[in-house]
Each structure stands twice: as C-alpha cells, then as structure tokens.
Image 1 (cartoon, one colour):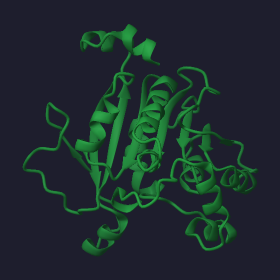
Image 2 (spheres, one colour; image 1 turned 180 degrees about the horizontal axis):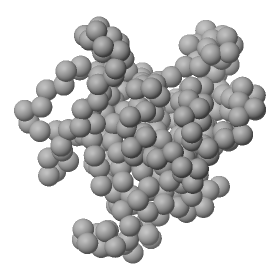
Image 3 (cartoon, one colour; image 1 turned 90 degrees about the horizontal axis):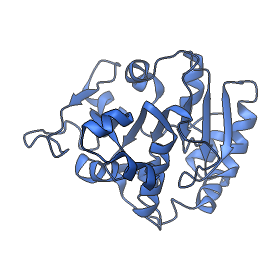
Image 4 (tube, one colour; image 1 turned 180 degrees about the vertical axis):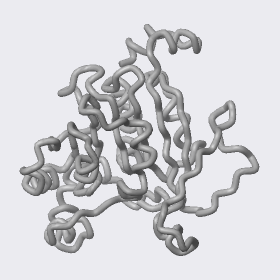
Length: 261
C-alpha cells in the first residue's frame, strides 16, 4: 500500500485478506508460518514516544487495534505496560493465527470484525483507537470513500470523551483531513510527520526515529512552504475527541453529531 496506490479493489473484502494470510507466497503468511510478525509502516519502538504521551500506560486505558493483521505492535505494547488491547481484523484466518500465538498473553483479545460495523461494542468503550494502515486499505475498497466514512463514524462513537484516535497513514492532509472532519466526527487534530524506516536508515547514522510535529493551517492543510524530507513519509494524525461542552464551544451542533452516530 506504499503511496496509497490502489492496485486492487479488494482491500475491504474478507476474502482478499483471508487469501493473503493463507497464501504461502505472501509476506504476511510467510512471517506467520515462521512464527514471526509483519508490521506495516512503523514499529512500536518508533511510535512509543508519541504513544506514551498520548495514551498513558495505566491499567484503565483500553485500546482498540483496527486491522491488527499479524503485527507485533500489540504484543510490544503489553510488554511496555498496556493491559487491555482488543485487536480486530476482517480476516478470520489471521485472527485465529494471532489467538493461537498470543494465547498466553491475557492482555490481548482477538476478534474477527469489519471496521465499518463495530456495533458489538457499546458507545464510548475505548480510550484509544489505533489505526496503522487500515484507513488506507479502506480507501482502496470497492465502497470507498463511503466505507471509510462509516469506519471513522464508528471510531468516533467508540471513543470516550477526550479519547484518542491515532491514525498512521500515507494520506496527506488534503486527502485525510476532509474525511476526518466529516459531520459524525468531532475532534481536534494534531499532525506529526515521520519518514519511512528505510529513508531514516539511509539518511541518518542515528537509529532513533525522527518525528516532527507540523502545525496545520486554519483550513487543515500543510503550510505552503512545507517540504517533505521523505516523499513517502507517514502522516500521523492524533485526533482528540471533544467532550459535548467543547463541541458546543466550537459551534458544532452536538445533537446533529449524536443523531448522525
């Protein structure tokens, strides 16, 4: 999914991902067969400084991992003190693989689920929703962008007031901010930009990943003079869900938002 090039319209279909995780020729299934993991975009050590600040470790923090795949992210988070991470994926194949791999880690729960309909969970069930590439996949699905909009509305519904939706994506603000700011979502957005691991390895002798906070313009875009160091950079959107009082103060009709949800 590098560069968000949609070479397949199957990214929103369970059959596509089941086949991918079952096929002996895929990176994901090869990693699973070897007892390894496959991480899209960025690893936990790279994201840790931001996560530890935005999603404190106390046991009360409940995290939802969207499109978990066979990533190492959730396991690394439990090693770092997170105690309640619910992992969902549209592929029943990878969910069964991960249940088996992590059956000795009670902090991790795995469920087969479509992110466009997470009605199994009640409103305001999570303190944080993590998305590492899932929205990008949804934008390559047959029902895009409607499916992506449904997913984001569900994310907003599931977050507790002041909860965090942390989105790691290839989508620049001109592509993602209008989608994030749809009627059913009421949050403030902070943007960080992070070069890809390959670029950082090539350009820097330091192994410490670089992450830069970039102030968006009033209309939610990059400053006109901003230049990406790495053309394939990852955009990290920290979406902070507003409480009803904050929504009202910003001139948003809370009844309209609630009814849309």
